[in-house]
Image (cartoon, rainbow, N blue to C red; front, side, top):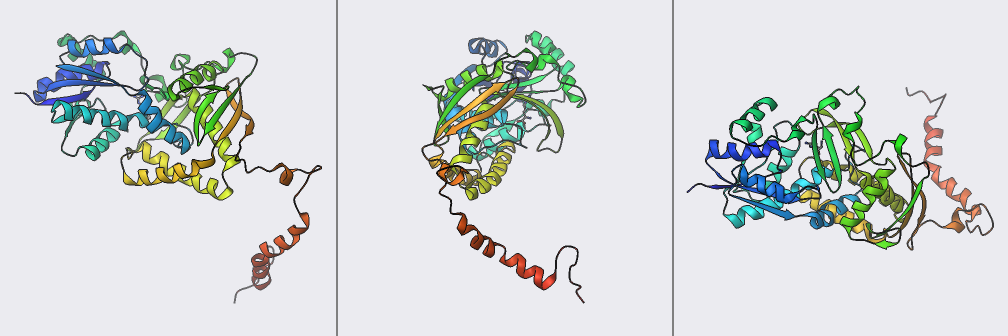
Length: 405
Ligand code: ARG
């Protein structure tokens, strides 16, 4: 009896060819697996296609709620943005897909898993490292990393075996899409001097085509998790979807980034993340108001490491889990409401309030009601400057440092 392999299946050309290729080259019975991470598509068509191209079974799982609860929102709480620009939409979905694939492999008695990643990207690392962490006994096969076929040759292979070649193959871009964002690469984008062609963008309007009046929105957070939009309570999936609509209409959420891949390549990436842009902006604004200076400073450093861990495929590393515990602890009082203005591609914070605000009007004001004791300042400054004074007296400073003989 043939051994079974679970393939992460998208319904696209590469993974459809992979079904056949795994049969031809490894004699596997292929079980196609698709996780619905919010990449709106016709999943019954995906299932039909999987079976048509030779899979013995196709399993589709709704992963949206888990994606939001266990991956997207924790990353939001962490302020995890890779290299200051990328909200990690693709990177965050990978460990979840692997987790589900490993479960399917166990249920189905499969001995291996497969994915359609090439040998040049980050996704192969995320798939392989996560699989090894969760199920070290499973074999991993990556057809596109092994078969050495060009795009043309893949199409020929498909034609030879009667695998439908979708018209979208005409699209020059490589696109990954899920609830948290769209990632676009290849085609004209590979020339970093070329402005992204208009057809790259699907979720966001060009600023030139946005309404001439700004939209004002309010997002309420409880412990760092967004729970209402304009006063309406929404589950995470719906809140993100509504925000994509709202912010995308105003051109918010476009990113054009030369990014450092883990494998050492710099690549040009376009991202569309309207909801992510609004939520990260709002969340950070609320943290400014509710975290102390020390908490903010340290958390910013953790955010960089946390984003790197996610990007580099280390979601299931104990170090990531330890940092997550710290991040959760910081969110205890990150509760309140942020008011934002969406206008011509920009998203700006225009109001904030929190029952746990550390902002004190009576300390900040220069007007009536000032409670700050200015008479305490000279003593504070006297001691604050003590080491500077001591050193400059002993060693000099500025134009006349004392000679050291
Ligand atoms: N560069 C991004 C990442 O590594 C996105 C990759 C998306 N993949 C794609 N086929 N467009 O997370």
